Structure formats: C-alpha cells, structure tokens
Image (cartoon, rainbow, N blue to C red; front, top):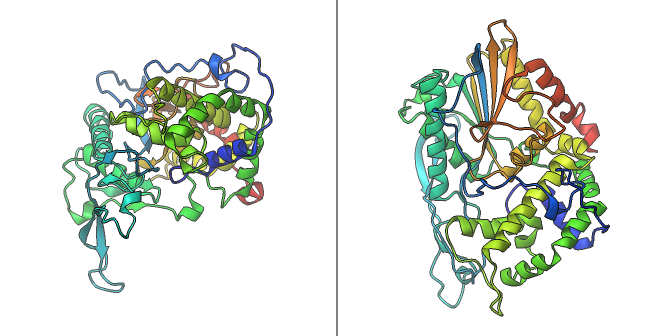
Length: 456
C-alpha cells in the first residue's frame, strides 16, 4: 500500500492485477455503489475537498434539547501530509517542521521519565554524482508521509474550534487542563498521527503549560496488534473476506470501466505496478497531495499530462471504491467486524462505562488515526453518500453521550461539524439523538464476539 496502514486496499490492487471477473452492470438509480455503475453513482460531492475537512462551529452548534453532555469521543484523521510515494523526476518540494521528541533517563534512575527533548530533522543531502541515493529522493524537508506544516496548522485550527464549542460554549471541558485523568489520548505508531494529536491539543488547551502534573499520556498499541487500522497480519480472515469482495464481478467491472484512465495515470506516473498505483488509494496519494499544494500535475514522457478532470475522476473512483468495500457489498458486516470491529468495541465499551458510572474523571477521549480508521466506522453506521466520501485531511468524527432530564442517555454522531446523515433506506436511528441502548445494540453486529476464532 502507498501509505502505512492500508493493507486492505493493497488486496484491492492485488485482485485487479490478477484479473478480476468482469460482468455487465445495469443503469440502476439506487444510490449504493454495489449495484450502480460509477458513472451513475450519486456522489453528493459538490462541497467536498480532500485537502481539508470542516470543523465544528460554535455559531451553529446546538446542544441536545433538555440534556447535559456527559462524555465526548473524537476520532480524527491526521492533517495534510507529504505523499508516501516520491519519484526523482516529480519536481516537487515538501516542507515539514522538525519533529520533537523526549528522551529518558536510565531505567531505575531517580529522574526516570521525561527529562528533555530533541528534534528529528529530515536531511536530504545534495547529490554528489557518485554515491548515496539523493538522486533517487526528493527536495525539501519531509520524510515519506510526514505531517506538513499545513497539516500541523489544520489540527491547531481544529483544536481551537473544539475549544470554542466544548470549553467556551458548553463549559464541558475545563478552561485549564490540570487534571489529565479527564482525558485519554491514543494514536497509532505513525508519527503524523502523534504530531496531529499534539497540535490539536495545543489548539484545544493553548494555555495548558508545562507543569509535570499536566503531562498527557500518549497511548499507542504495538503495530502488530493495532486495532485502529486494518490488521491482516493479526487477522488472516480479514484478507479472505476482502478478497471475496474485490473478486466480485461488480468490482471487476468497475475497474475495467476505468481502464483507459488507469493507463494514462500509469504512463504519467512512470510507476505502473508499483506502490504508487496500489488501487485508487495510491493515485489519490500521489495526485491529491500535489493538488492540495497547488503543484503541477505529472506528465508522461510523450507529453501527455494528467488534468484536473482526471484528478476529479480519481477522487470519485476512490469514493466509489471505499463505499463498495466498507458499506455496500453484502459481505461488509463480516469484513468490517474484522477490519475495525475491535476498535468499535473499544468505543462502545468506553461509552457504556460512562453510562454506568465507571469512567471516573474521564470525560474526553481523543483517537488520532487515519482515513482508514474513519471510513469503516462510517460504513458500519450506514452513512449517506455525501458523508461516506473519502475522509479529508483533519476529518473529525465525534460521538457525544448526553444525559436527558428523565435520566435516559442518547448518543449524537457529528462528522466534520455536522450531524451525520444516513444512507437512504438505512435510517436506523436519529444521529442527532439516538437512544444509547439502541445505539449500542446496533453496534453489536460489527463487534467480534471471539476475534481469534473469527480471524482464523
């Protein structure tokens, strides 16, 4: 896969490379991707931008009527990043600030713990024409997939918007964070998710200070057992389920319908069959990152260039592909259970603890992750076509737990500052005020009961 943590879409490319079965499709007007040609699919993307998501707005945000907010979960995608695929002839320069980290005293030391910091600076030496690999790399100060300065600013802005709603308007989160038991922070092991979380919290609590008592623990799982992304190595059954989806006749027909565009893209990228073309995710990685920074689109050796219209179709193909494999195919309930079901279980259990009075001081949980974390959750919830679009940089999905005056609890789901809308024909609950018991019951379909057995 082009960027870290996308083995599921790597299966997509492997299937296409092997030659998926192809069949004709009808011109159905149904809005799902499973039985609709990509040319007829209603994307609802008129206001969409991959380059950056919308944020909550305190001028339009309203509380649930006759209710008090009790718990907030926030799942975010990292901000703008450098692409994960580079070529020496792409002619692009990417700028990233140095990454800061802490260093530790020796184990057993009285000062064991955080005692200082260092900066990781990406160094790209000038090619000397003789040795090294600088001629195969790129210009600027970014590693592959690193959070750019623009991405840092996106999460600073998101944090400030969250502050305006949850601190200043609702008074739910504290003005000063002195008790870090009130929040939980988890990221993946990829640096851009950690840096995005740091920027977001800096925007949310810009005056938190450096008092040791206010240090926020940053939790990560070992990548071998990570649950916020697809983990085929830990769950072989997921690979089997995804192969069944991507080997379907409908999926093969979709890729065949885009054969001419694929050929044009591969010629311009000079990377056919490489990590740069691992399904539509690969094309999105290469092209949208450039477009978001106003960079020139690549051309083939014979002068045929990728156009803005080509990029728009690439993006639409990406939307279509994600809806197909994460929401619409009949095998999705099985695949999503193995794909992200363990993390959905974590979210459900945390909310239930809050309902049952077992959360202690905890009232805010932040999960900084990836597009492939958010999209299967949206698929499980049966998000509308508009809300099922590829999660933009700094996409933000909030689960709010509210207690009503009669003692009942409701869950509100907010995507990029607006209440989530559901797919036509699948409006199983009001996402502005869904009874908590109904919400938890619905999620059971997507939470494994015995992950070891199901993954075998």
